[in-house]
Figure (cartoon, rainbow, N blue to C red):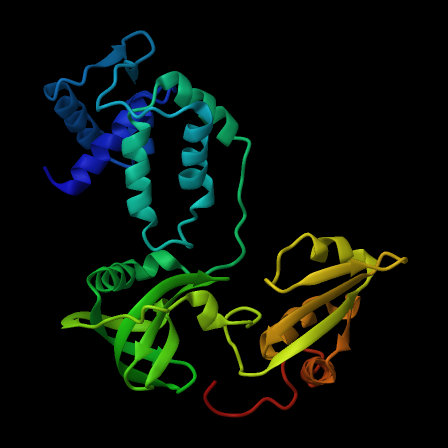
Length: 337
């Protein structure tokens, strides 16, 4: 039987065991199949010994509570955690293998008792997750799978890469070291034979990936924490600064509640303001973060960071002052955008 049909049947089993009443149209709609396909799948279930029930008075279908596969022994909290991850926290855009994870969840859910599914379903209905904007990871699922295979086999990959920094497409030979999600996107940390050093590559910018048969030995001491060092996010610049910021009382609590950096220390002042201190490699990333708090934050140290923030503020002001009343740049450059 084809894989997609197995997944479709598992989805149908889960719907039938969900405790909800479905007529034929409702089942077809939820399973995202046509009525003819639905009846064909129901016939397949019956021929496989999976007896569903049809209520002729209500014209609805359901499935008994007998286990279809060897039981998975989950308590209510474990089942709830699993369903929360797959139904709420694992957003499609975040993980390239979302569909695979969802298929696995459907298989497990099909084994759970109906009473447990119903209980967890009621709890999940009251929970929502709103992710920050992220890259569409699912669009790069094939690339992700290829890189994952190369990592497991410890073989090199040849990558056609759209480099923003170089403003060109690069043909790279890479030794993959780690796949990592940072802030909004997935990245590959790899040793680049072109650059003769370890670099970070965004997987959405990989136009083509070829997994070779060339083995390599990854460094024993590689660790992404050491690789990123004291960078605010992921771009160390080679110089470490002791940063001190003052956040006004209006935003102090929201800043204090978040773990922004491993070195951060916070202290409240009598008026409710927050003194935020951290030891950071590079200023560009933290300067952009500071700008997001606008007039609610003041740079106390170092002077170089204060200058960087002022420079960004001046450029922001100049960009807005350079617009006419119609909202278009008064001195916009001519030619290709």
